[in-house]
Image (cartoon, rainbow, N blue to C red):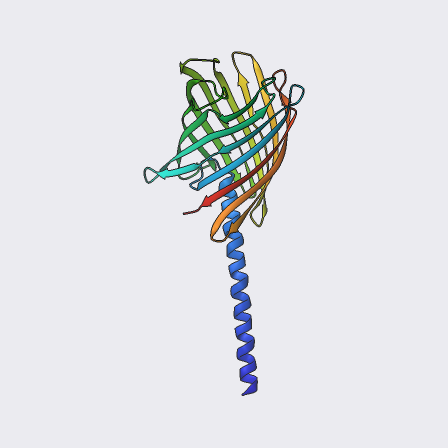
Length: 266
């Protein structure tokens, strides 16, 4: 009888250990799947990033703090297609970027809408195309005070732990007081590698070409992120650094990026 009880106890402990192991593997799989989805700008994942950027030094001692609120909302519009809304609303605080001035307020909002197939192509490419617009929400002279519109396009491939691709848009002003003329192309090549356990290492260039000035601005970003959980809320934490390879006179030299992203998997 004692041997039977010991055997049952052993089986119960083994089953409990196996269940815990399977649960841990399932959580890790979920974290890795979410990390992979975050590397895809047109993934069918609702997310709300709060991205903080610190940039220095503009001119002699200018510095800028920017909090980008960037909700991403995918909507299924047919059996084969998704519509993905991506919004960037910057909240800016800066000192001596404009010499002798301290400024705080909203920047201009950039709204992009991608129409993207739900399934990759036969070669594994994921893509999306649609319109983009800059909305003049800027305050305290932190915006261009004009509307701008244009096309946007993203293409990428996810191959094992690797994700690589590029996002492009072009914006040209179409109305408003036109405190500045806008004709700018944004080009963001990116590559990332999953490290397992919800971790990702990513590198990108957030390049912008000003066609009026004939000038590139090219920051290079290196970031590390990890998917985790706060209570029942899935989140991703990001930290990284950047250096400016090129820019107009007085452009910043370096920067720091920190972000927390709220995730709402379906």
